[in-house]
Image 1 (cartoon, rainbow, N blue to C red):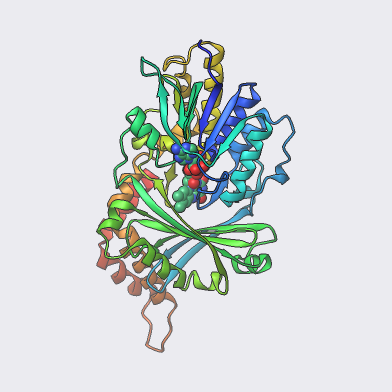
Image 2 (cartoon, helix red, strand yellow):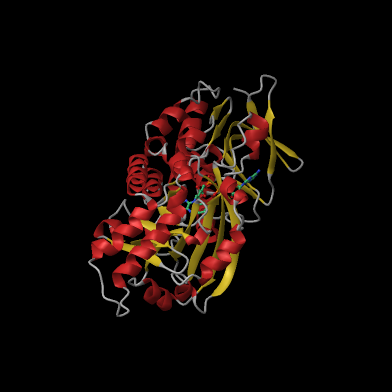
Length: 437
Ligand SMILES: Cc1cc2nc3c(=O)[nH]c(=O)nc-3n(C[C@H](O)[C@H](O)[C@H](O)COP(=O)(O)OP(=O)(O)OC[C@H]3O[C@@H](n4cnc5c(N)ncnc54)[C@H](O)[C@@H]3O)c2cc1C
């Protein structure tokens, strides 16, 4: 193999890139990470809650006890799952808590990317990676056969045996340089998020959680003004993350904007009391891949592998959003594959092909495949985002409101409300959704 500046160059220091760099450095490879943000996490956004299983697996395999789990800057352990159907002024919320959420390997934590990504950056750097921040990779360097042999960042061309592209959702490198298709607007959502500072005890009280514990709340219905999408709220240590996600093609057609929906969401009776008196300290926007399994592009090339969101490894199931655990696992697999290929002196597509089997044999692609019908089902299920949350509000109003009018039995009050929407239609839609989920 020809001499190169590094064994591996990693583009992007998010969850996928930092873990790829860490795993490769732990296998004694020379690694350069190029991150366009002034610091890791500066430009990153998530809802967000991290399912920790894949991070735990990486640390168990590579950290040799050097990393103390308690030192990882998680925010709160998520012990409550809440899902709310929002009407214009109503909310029907299911709150579920379980001992299972706390078990090792099953826990999830709320995270803030500025601190969490900085920790990931430090982890990779402590393993011996060289880091460049504040410079974006503009293009890939290729040899005469078209194989990737490095990157162009600023004025520099830097070469490597393998380049791992982990630049997130808007992966211009894979599109411009490797021919990956531009995602369609019905496969992508726009996400916006605001972070509100609040006293730690107040958060515990408002989320009804024990100290250091928190809730993950997902909303559907009026939060997006009935447009396909949803809302989220996570309890952090001393802040609350609140945001919306909505499919771009649907929001384009709507008579509202995501910004207007966010303003109204903050004033919804299910949200306003939780953030009352809190100061907004951060505002961000980002795209989210929602197309699932069917939008995964090619991710193995001569001299290059694509990991995390850049390979569209992200799932939005409505009751669960996952991307970071997939990014961490795919970053690890990309690094393991690259190290093996370098040792075998074959970094061609064939030499790097075990990345595909690693992903396909893991939860990453298996889970995405299981739920591959969901994105289309969700897109076609308009009433889930508008009429049904409103219907649920009407059902509960009729159940609980007492105004002195003689009451009919519950069934007689509820049935007309459901019948108006079409009982068979409702049953069919729910059946289809359950099959896809
Ligand atoms: C609103 C929203 C809510 C979400 N909620 C959740 C959730 O609750 N749980 C969950 O697991 N996932 C969630 N996700 C998805 C999750 O955030 C992503 O799947 C995850 O961040 C992907 O990690 P990544 O490392 O692949 O990409 P990123 O985290 O996007 O990292 C990419 C990195 O590459 C850098 N970069 C980009 N281009 C270049 C370049 N040309 N040169 C150098 N550096 C570059 C960026 O600055 C960034 O640091 C959510 C996403 C959004 C937008």
